[in-house]
Image (cartoon, rainbow over all chains, first blue to last red; front, side, top):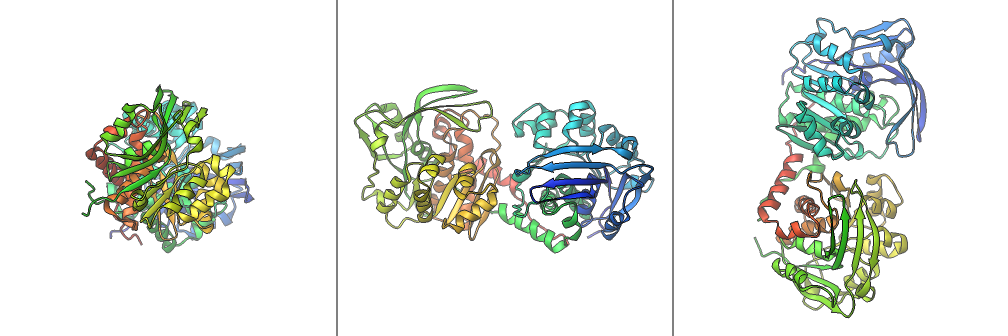
Length: 309
Length: 309
């Protein structure tokens, strides 16, 4: 095996205050880039480009250090760190945002340094699609780019979201986002429409119902890992992205077989993320546990087809 | 390959009047035993035990004949055939029952003849659990029994439903039924609870999100076949049951590998059923089409796991 390839993530590092039926946390480490990098760090080296305020605690930086995540691209700006306050009701389906303080994130323009611009695997986490395009302009010949987005941007800047979709290799969407962007309720048809409109490949996350990968060549479905200790769904999508890219970066592969196993890795990492508040489980988990969940997922879908008629 | 084994189904043969956003039909052939037997008939010989009224049209009998389904156990009673009138809204998720006329079905007690009592594969379609128990008392050493039920019986006769669950090899439930019966929203936990309460194995159908099989030994998940020509969801569950048992009866197998492929067969047959009103597609389809869908489903989940760490 060759050395794992470096991954660049551009997104948010935040302080989250979250309440779920299972408890609550205040100013916990959050943000898309955090969940993503802790998840991906088990597979390959990760560099973060993001911004925090001068109130960002050292103990949170130490967590990144403990997983070997490169924070040389993490700007510290004068002001407060991006803060999000939200809660989940009994069903844990959707977050209700109670408060968002953009703070230093309001004026953020990602600066990708010379070193980071050569990272072969790139994740554009859920930020303004204009910023995602700025990042795409700064990176050089990546092997695979993955984007995330949210309904907020789909409603306000659909053209920009589509521009990102056409420029990245794979676009990550949840069910509602895929439906909204494609203007089509039926998921399989929504995926087709997004490809017709120029997307190269889409991953549609269906929460407890798993995820599907759809490109012109490949159609793959993975169930969710059946988590029984669900605690806080925050960061599930970014953790999925971390496992997905992490696996591909580990082997420097982007072929169909690798993509399928990468979907299982994403699923396994998402299942770990939601078993604790903030990325605690993602930080503590070990490769044996990750491999165990991937193996268990594989066991739940695998069989050898024999001819019937 | 040995000769396929005979399947016995006890359920309803009905006249359905259905409206969906894609059209409507009046007094079309319906009922759980109908959908089931057309589906299963592509895999193995099927015998029906049910009742119709003296108004049941010959043209519907001819359809069973065309698929070689044995109607020697179909009673004809004085009175009207069981009629159901329902409609589906845009989302096609749930049927709204507009009218149910039990007619001759009100006094039905299934009589399983000596020949039929030896059928090695048995499907107890959704009828009063008391009647399902009567059938179980009449059958002799089957290889596999499968039951279906509905919320109506779970609400009214939960103890009887549980008694059926404990006596059959596999119990088929949809998401809502599994949640209601287990008293647990989380599906994986609901499945565990049903096993704890004595079920031997459960299949939970999740509609467009596929289905899962859960026993003490096996845990298997299959996605739904991505249907784009959805027309009428009626009979999807019974068609699933037909493909599932059909495949097992064809080979006389009940082992884990066979169960997995049987889940794919059930999924394929359900996808065909919902592409037309009444069991029209199920009657017309051919083994090449069925095998094609099963192969395509397998292709959507299959990969060879390689070690990562």
